[in-house]
Structures are given as structure tokens and as C-alpha cells.
Length: 131
Image 1 (cartoon, helix red, strand yellow):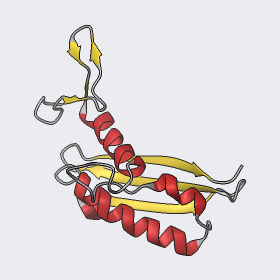
Image 2 (spheres, helix red, strand yellow; image 1 turned 135 degrees about the vertical axis):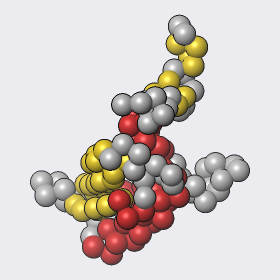
Image 3 (cartoon, one colour; image 1 turned 180 degrees about the vertical axis):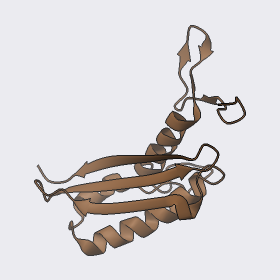
Image 4 (cartoon, helix red, strand yellow; image 1 turned 90 degrees about the horizontal axis):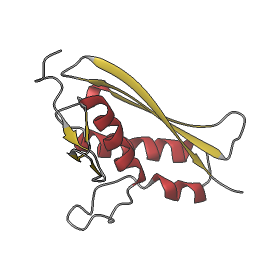
């Protein structure tokens, strides 16, 4: 694989190691970007108030189909913008559902294909509600 297809990105949040700023390859960088979108609340970033999906707030919502549909639409828009140039919107598949064993838990699955590498990945995040 050429270096053109595997650029190096600075890790976020910025961390310093013995060699300077810690860097990541493309695939872990995309995973970090997805996590950043999911767990950043809208309005949290001063110069990008529209950035983020704020899924932590979903623990206070009734876990059912209406919540899943709204969350899916919000994530589709947020992730399409954040991953532009790396993942085509048509290659982004988002699933939102309740955990079968623990219905109070919300499971968010994000499947995507990195355009430059033709690499497909699935990441899942769990948002737990209640005590």
C-alpha cells in the first residue's frame, strides 16, 4: 500500500510522545473521528456549533423506534459531513437499536467503507441508560 493511501494524522486529542506529536494511520483516525462526532454535544465547539451528535443525552430519552429513527438521521448528517472525502455518504450505514439483553441500553452501529482503501469497517457504541 502506498504512502499516498496511508497518510499520517495527528492524534486527537493531541498527545506528545518521545518523538513529538503522537500520530495515527488512516483507519484508526477515521474511528476517532466517528467517536468524536458521536460524543461531542452540538454547541460544544466554539467555532463549529453544529458539530456533533451528542448521543450521551439519549440516555434520558425513551428507548424505542422513534428515538432510533431520529438518532439515525442525525448521525447520517453529522457523519457524512465529518467524514467527507474519506467515506461517501452512500457507503455509510447506521443502525440504532436496543440491546436484546438489556433494553435500556442503546446500541449504535456504524458501518462504512473507506473510499481510497476500499476497506470496510463496522464499529459499535453502547449508550447505557438508567441505573
